[in-house]
Length: 196
Image (cartoon, rainbow, N blue to C red; front, side):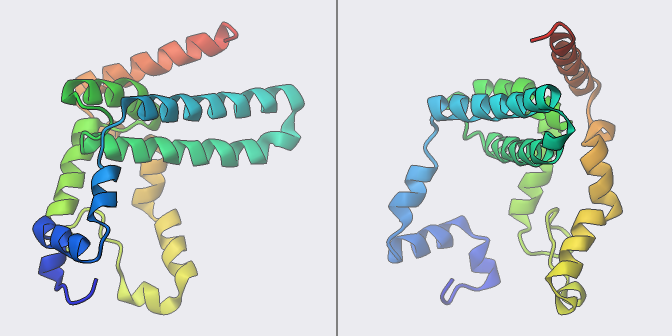
């Protein structure tokens, strides 16, 4: 970004001025529009693709397992992107509806606490680029010097990331969030057992 300092880059006012000067502010505004129908379609499509991948694997057999896992992982990542949008209350115009959608449709399958995610993500925005305070800070000069594979491997196989990949935020959830997550999984597994 041209002549913006690190402090300027974390200032939303400076970013908007930069966007206006370079002609893409209108596109950014458009991207921030809350579209309930598009959100519903995105969620439904993710669930349909995950269900289809599972069904194909069960019907066809083990030969489809690897492509199914890749598709499911891709759609799970898409659900996490929607959780990110929900943390900014961008799913729909009603903040309460936004949070209900996140709590019941997005967070439980990913074992994520919306309140905890929102808090951590806000800290990320408030301290963007600060190695000590940015909760998503990934920059490590020593790893970068070793190449992209070292950086990727560290992120992929790091203890914290492996734990989060397997157990999500279960340890950091409130009792109510754990109950919601357990209820969601009980309903889904009951539906699968009944042959949905």
